[in-house]
Amino acid sequence: MSFSTNAYVRFSVFEAVERIGAAGYEAVEILADVPHLYAPSVDDALLDDLRRRIISAGLRTSNINANTAVGFYGRPFWEPLFEPSLANPDPTLRKWRIHYTRRCIEMASRLDCLNVSITSGRMVSGIRPEDSLDLLKFSLEELLPFAERHGVRLGVEYEPGLLVECCDELTALIEQMDTECLGANLDLGHSHVLGEDPAEVVSNLGARLFHVHLEDIKARKHYHLIPGQGDLDFRALFDILESSGYDGYASVELYTCPDRPDHAAAESLTYLEGVMKSGGRTKE
Image (cartoon, rainbow, N blue to C red):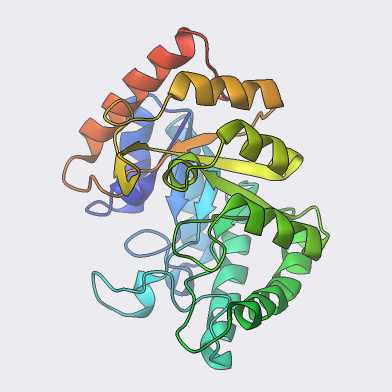
């Protein structure tokens, strides 16, 4: 089981890693944004130090979460959160995100991490969705050979309201790109909000399921809750993952708990370990 540092935005990335290791997790997902690893301001010396800290904490790196770029705006919060995106119609901004993602790929390689998660970004008013998808594909065509050379996989995370917002749209994109380096960072909470059948989703993604995000959801509202506080049947979800042969990490993602990250990490692990002991399992 893994935990994302995006719950620890009031701590440095080093403190976040130490606390996640102390909580008993096997792996850590690193936020590739402020205040942790904002790609343009990260050098290799810092990455080497972080790699040593991760190992010292008894952890592995499950994923580099490159979904957001709050650091681009130089302020604590900004919406749209995922811009500039790989589908942004402004070529300068789109190029910025391509270079940002390339650096995230380099960071993943330096941290012995197999996965980098990305998103499509939101649809832009006045731009036809099919045109935005073409821009996304052009960006991916630049990134995927670079990722392959570094031994890193790009997992697209779909989300309600984004350009790529459901499993069917993601699987279509994966098929069109025709490379083993492109797959899914599957957030099972997002899938639940959309009303998707988790068994069908996992089956359709197959070997292109690279990494999993976990959180609980109540009443299909997209708000990340500590596992056990919402409606998700984690026992069933773990059984589906195990039956599919998925052997990657599942990272608990609770960016909604910056005021109590230690509590959120501990309570999540206690609950999920209890679920796994009762029958459902995923990689620890």
